Length: 355
Image (cartoon, rainbow, N blue to C red; front, side, top):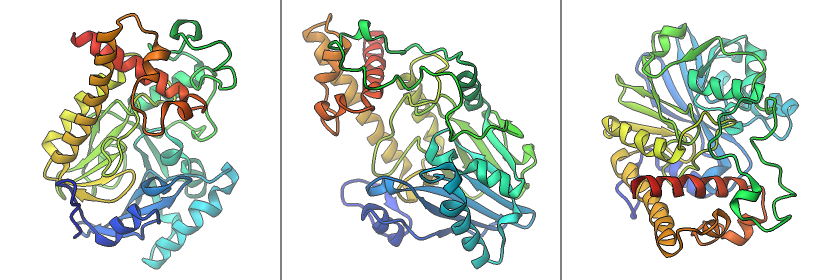
């Protein structure tokens, strides 16, 4: 094992850790042999560092194969077969299995790097499709244009200079499904606390769904109490901190507040091994949860200090005074400006509510 010097979290596999932090795509790792084989396989995606791949969890059971988060579909939807399914088929054949044995595809949240390859995988295999019930509500909201977004950005309300946002369309403004969302409805929607076998998946799993909103409204983690594993997806990551409020549609409420509550909810799994959505498998969830909470509260403290100085400051000027990893100037001139503005509004409301 390779322990990080700057924290108490410990990577589970040295090679996987070294590849992930070295901007390489990690090789597959087998994480359990209890009731079948449980593998973690990195699927390449555009990005750098640990964000150059997404981790897909694959269970090879006697009654079928379950894939959690099939991954990025490639630059175009039609490229998915070449970019995702053929390498996956090769991975399975090396272990005496075949693509056609995939019986269930489970998605933790509706982001293109996690759900993008689902449509092609479902079409190729006829597998059952599982998505969280709350996350499906966001998909339905964007399909019908009925998003309940408390943080829809009104240009004239945030104090942005004239014309500065005209070249970037508001990401939640258009009705209709994004191309990375499967057009078919899930065969089963997963409620908080459900065990995956309840929905037709092989009883070899025993994964318990844990609703962890914040990154998206219906983000799910899965707790394997028998194997003491937690699939944390993008709720807790080992090297970076997840964005907040990034659903395909909003269902109302403050995602930052929801995220903090969901972060605390994972305390019962602090002694579990974590399979995140990006990076590498690790132990030390309690330490990483605290690091993540501290990061969120540091941003809240920044917002609080600016509001103490000028309670009437516009959202645009407030955002420009915060510490952004890429710098405000570059962020303000990219499509990510909408996310920055929305998160500034969320943190402002959190601070004002707690004042």
